[in-house]
Amino acid sequence: QVQLVESGGGLAQAGGSLGLSCAASGSISSINAMGWYRQAPGKQRELVARSTSGGSSNYADSVKGRFTISRDNAKNTVSLQMNSLKPEDTAVYYCNALVIGFDRLTRNYWGQGTQVTVSS
Image (cartoon, rainbow, N blue to C red; front, side):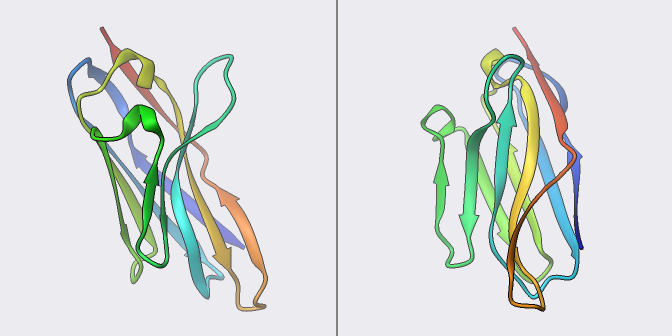
């Protein structure tokens, strides 16, 4: 079993900054990809940013140039620095990891979610 523990988030004013962190622990052989998704009220969950084990990253168009994802493969952690926040960034943010276990099977895991609220 694998656990994803998130920290950070909270309340910020428009134009401000917040950071999110996520640490994966448990039966992990390696992690293929780690990233962040978000879900606003009444909307579907969407990709925010994702980092692959090969070192590439991709971002939602809506956050490009404002958000930066970083990953520490040795520590199985991923962080998201969010700058120039907008009210439309308000959502519950979920950490996600595509984990390869010691049984060589790949499984998808989610964190519990952390609230980000941006006031105008």
